[in-house]
Length: 154
Image (cartoon, rainbow, N blue to C red; front, side, top):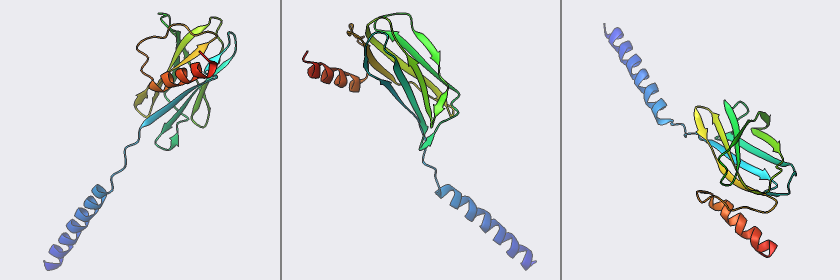
């Protein structure tokens, strides 16, 4: 009888020990990150612009996103073009496009992967800029536009 109790105590202690050690090892949460770029940021009419969404989940490049869609529009225009993008390489989803009308434009990449959604927005210019939208919440883009104006002597 003592052997049965002793065996039972050892089994219970082992289970508790394993459960406690698993609780102590917490995984750091991973997040879906999307770095959206336009190259060049200031293009000429009918010049091709390359848009890239670099998608990562933690340190891992996401090569199998559920959906990557680029939404593009000219400032103050109600018509938004939406274009699906496939995976190009190393977590990069790419779209090449040219524009026949000059002005200030915006692009949002709608990325869904790993049960998360991320949608960064950037501004780019074709030819001469038009009046930007007021709800542009990208402080980095505002800094880039100011620096570009200073560089061009405007």
